[in-house]
Length: 149
Image 1 (cartoon, one colour):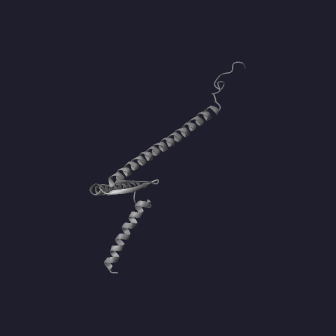
Image 2 (cartoon, one colour):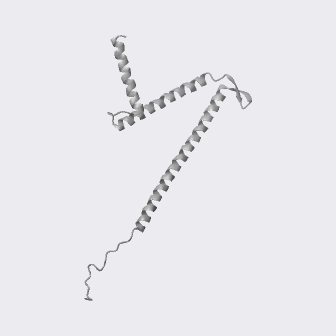
Image 3 (cartoon, rainbow, N blue to C red):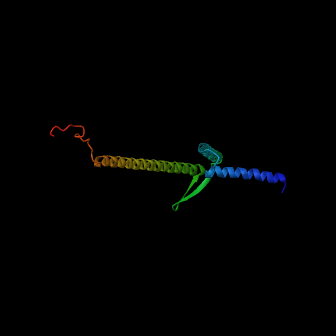
């Protein structure tokens, strides 16, 4: 290996180490906000990459989607076009996405309700504790003068 190869490997090792630090959150010299911002940017980059791949697939189907496909579902076989399979996949994906969205909304609602119940129980416990403490009224006889001596 030449010195240039070793230098290139050192640069790539540093980049891999930095990427590992970003992904694992094991950084000691970065602020938490900067690390979170970097994670968000990586997620945005990944989303854009997935969208680009999706666009390429859609364009490929549009340009060459006239072929015939034999589909076998639960023992039933029928012929359809590539477009038919593609549309069926899109519809299935949208139904799955709607199901996941409903599941996520339900989980958020359950979590919020549990937090509300815990908060209300704490409030009731605090009120019961306040009521259980003896009410100490100031002794009225301390400041009064006795006249019956």
